[in-house]
Each structure stands twice: as structure tokens, then as C-alpha cells.
Length: 193
Image (cartoon, rainbow, N blue to C red; front, top):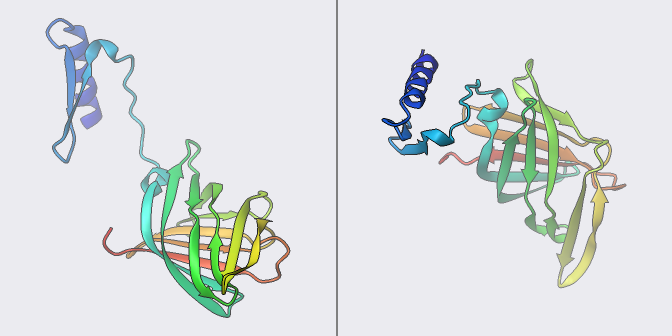
């Protein structure tokens, strides 16, 4: 019904061009945005997709478990963007894990694209083992660089993104190059958001 009323108001504004120079839209938060009526070519209404509801920037803790033996935590901001086909992209920023067995380890930024929604699990899921995604990793221990290179993500790389009662949760499992151990990063959105 709101769409019909808005469309009728827009049509009326356009047909009375001399009387209505601006179309003003008042948003739920009270802010107003105005558009010159003669600049409006078309108004299209679309339904919000599940991908749209996930899009945004999320802050929280990233608990990174290496080889199911060591866990390190750091604050991180994940960015999710929605694609027109209903999939999403996850942008993982560069972050540093301090005090790991290999020293202070910096894991470079990368993006997992085209993550599809799985209705059964109510989450976005993707096996990206074959996507050819690479990242730069550097580890420095006692002032000496023990690791510094680019690695292509390999077998076992998958991500699950869901919304829980506490907020966004991302479980991202990956292997770097030919390294034998799996790294599982579990992101939990901060409660303040």
C-alpha cells in the first residue's frame, strides 16, 4: 500500500511540474532527502533480499584456531556486500595475531565472493577451495622474520555466515598453500552493535 501511495504522489508531482519542483522523502529516522522532479527518470520498488539484510560493516572478535591446538584473538571489522544475484561477498581485512608460536603473525586482506544463501541452514555458505584466492602472511618472532610470502588458499577452505541472537557469526576455515594444518577463524559480532 505504501508503494502505491508513494507512486501516486510521485506521479502527481511530475504531472504538476510547475507547482512541485522538488520531491522530498522523509525517512523513518526523520531525515529528509529532496530530489528535483525534472531529474527523476524512473522510480522502481524492489524487495529487500536476504543478502541486503546481511550487507554492512561488522565489528567484533575474531578467534583464530590454528591446527586445533592454539587459539588467538583479535578485534576485526568484516565488510559484507550484497550482489544483485542474491549472493554476498565477505571482505576480510588484514589483521595481526600477537604472540603466536610463530611470532606476531599478520594475515593479509582477501575477499570471498559470491557466497550463496542456504535455506536449510539459514546461512550463507561457500566452499572457496577452488577460487584461487591468495593472501600475504608475515610472521616475526624475536625481531626475525620467520614467514613472509603469498599463499593460495587450498583444500578445506569454506565459510559459513549467519545471524544469531547475538549478531553476525562467521566461521571461516582455510589452509594456506601447502601447509598441512587448518586455520579456523570464528568471528562474533560485538554486542554493542
